[in-house]
Length: 98
Image 1 (cartoon, rainbow, N blue to C red):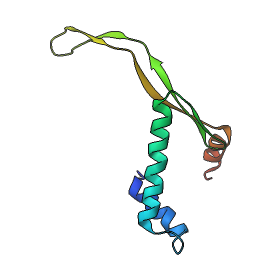
Image 2: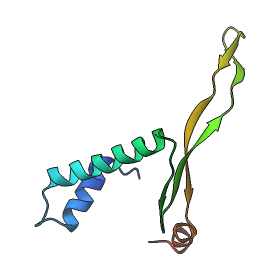
Image 3: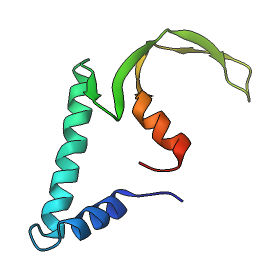
């Protein structure tokens, strides 16, 4: 099953239903996502204890081939997001729940 951002908003709003509107929960979720993206874009890492570490990794430039024409294609160096789950998260997945 895939959980979407809308699903997350729905689940969170059910837990805090009388206090915060679904619209406010959606804004908070979007603010969190934006902050994670901005932090990673700046080259910083995010560590959430009990969950994991998000960071970026530099991929080296390489030469690939176009499968149709067999021509070489230069792929420039780029940053890619990386997530490493914490030991606690890994253990909770082994037990079948958080």
